[in-house]
Structures are given as structure tokens and as C-alpha cells.
Length: 234
Length: 220
Image (cartoon, chains in turn cyan, orange):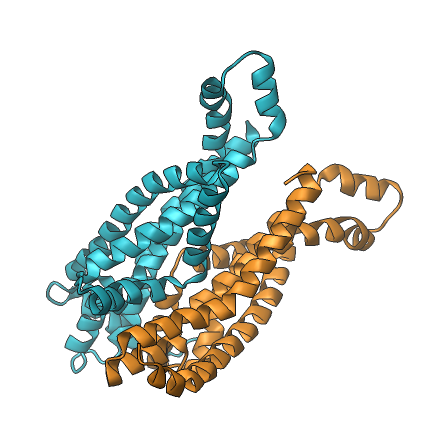
């Protein structure tokens, strides 16, 4: 177990949050993170749905193009994409994006690909006999999509896209690499600022950041699993 | 593009890719073990251990690897636990990967329907035999695409390791940008290196997924 010394060090470390505005600042940093995540998530949900529908189009060239885009986004680590958007774009095209803009751009492009694949999977997981039955009772293509395919797809999609949202929020932690002042950066500032007065405060700061991320993501995971369970029962 | 420069730095990238791959391999193997262990605990609902595993999985799935690494590398030394950056990476990757593997394995185990297990018991198989001859063969094939996706995810996640001073691909690229201002070359090489590492995994994963779909639905 922890020695009394260690416990002492920890309780002293946590005192850093009661000094000045440290805790408020950290929460503000978290809001920046959430803001970037929220914008990217909303954009990716929209574009991802379109992209997913595009992927089910039966044109060979469109299919190939979508596949290449998806594979590229899947294979590249998000950090590499972030570097390409932040440093590469500036260098090659002279487009200088702020860290926030670069992050939103990258997360949206990545999220669109991932969401698109989920939408495609959900659309295709509807068995072929559903289409056939729809046709047999005399519905046209639009009606089949509206009354048969869409409801089934949405049901499958909700928990999956919730999980994607948690993944995107977690990925947002990378924006510290491109100089966005968010929760990690502010945490580092607090640690540096109190280096002399509270030398052990890094443990408190990183623990709090850890749990901040945990609670934000956990809410979504919990909702996803509740919805999933309810669907299974139904 | 400065091809002379590219030729010079390729060995650096190769070395870094080797390191990335090595950490990823160790991490994946350990996560496989942790994931399998946790999945079995959760599948059989072992008392006491099962809720503890559940807590671990929630914690690990809902926090970014970057923050876990920060905690391991910068916070723990205050408690007298000093880990090298290599150890931090392995522990971090295993902590993260274990829960992802667990989810894959458990959901694969749960896809085997109750009827199958009960039929096995009916013809007089013991618990172990049911596992060995009925559940596992079906579960393994279901878990392959998920497993491949996890492998790819974990290799991708190694890109944040540069933050704890491990000289991986990202670190080399950042270094070259800082030293020579060869941003284009460094970034292209970085992207290509990750392609070389991950394209085979992605191809295998796609193949496995198609095979599984074929087995389940009888068509592509």
C-alpha cells in the first residue's frame, strides 16, 4: 500500500487546485477541448451520412474513390494528419491554419470517413430480402428506403455513432501537439507555474485531467450501452 | 522535393519504424493476453473479479492514451515509481489495448447462441469441452475482423509516443522539421512509413471481414 509519505505528497499535490484560479482554468481548457470535439462531431455526422450513402452507390469509380479516401483516413494516424494539416498545408500551399482550425479540419475529415463506413455498414447490413419484400408489396425505391431501410439503419447506427463520438473526444487530446491551449496545455502551465511551491502537483493535475476525460467520454459510452441494451430487449 | 535529403534520412525512418513496430508488437501481444483473460472473466461472470475488470475497461476505454502516458511518465515519479519511457509506452499500450481486445473477444464469445452451448451439454460435454469444441471455434472466426481492427488501432496509437521521448516515426519527423525545415519531405516520408506499416494489416482485416460476411450471409 501507499506509505504515509506518499499520501502526504498526494494531498499536498491536490492543494494546487485551491490556489488562485487554477481549477477554473483547467475547466476552461476542457471546454476548449469539448468545443473542438463538438464542432467536429456535428460536421462529421452530417458529412459522414452523405459519405456513407455515396459509398453504397453502384458506380465503380465513385466506389473506388470512396474506398481510397476511407483507407487513407483509416490508415493514417490522426496525429500524422494533424501535422499534415498544420505544418504541411502551410509549407506547401501557404495556407496557414490556426491550431484549432487544423484540428477541426482533420477531425472532420477523419470522422466523416469513419461515420461514412458505419452508415455504409448499417445500410448494407439490412438483408436483401427486406428490399425484395418491400418490392413485392409494391413500394417504390424511395418508399423502401424511407419506410424499411432507414428505420432499421438508424437503430443500428445510434449506439455505433455514440461510440465514434467518444473516440473523437479522446482523439481531441492530440490537439496539444499543434499548439492549441486546451486542458493538457493548461495543466502543464499549472505544473510549471507551481514548480517551486508544489513540486509534486503533476500527479494531481494529470489525475484530474484523466478523470475529466473519463467522465466526458463515459457519459456517451453509458448512453450507447443503455440504448444498445434497450434495442436488444425490443 | 529534395531527393538527396530523402535518401539520407530514410535509414532514420527505417530505424524508427522498427522501434514503433517493436513496441506495437509487444503491446499487442500483452493486450491480447490481458484481453483474453478479462474476456473470460467477464464471460463466466467470475465474482469479485468481474466488476473489477468492468471498472478497468470503463477507465481504459474512456480516456485517451496521451493522458494515460502523461500520467505514467510525469505523474507517477512523484510517488517514487520511476518508469523508463519504453516501459511507459508498453504499459500504456497494454492498458489501452487490453480493454479493446476484451470487448472484441467477449462480444465474439457472446455471439455463440445459448442453444449451441445447451446442445453441447446435452450430449454430455463438460464445461471445458463445450468451450473447446463448441464456443471457441465459432467465436474465434467472429473475432478476427475486430482483432485486426484493434491491431491497426494500436499501431496507430503508437504515434503519440513521441511525447515521452521515444524516438518513433513521429519523433523523427518532428526532429527533421525542426532541424532542417524540410517539412514536406519529412511529412511525406512519415505518411509513407505508416502506409507501409499499416496497409498489410488493413488488407488482411478487409479480407477477414469479407470472408466472415460470406460465411454469415452467403453473399458479398
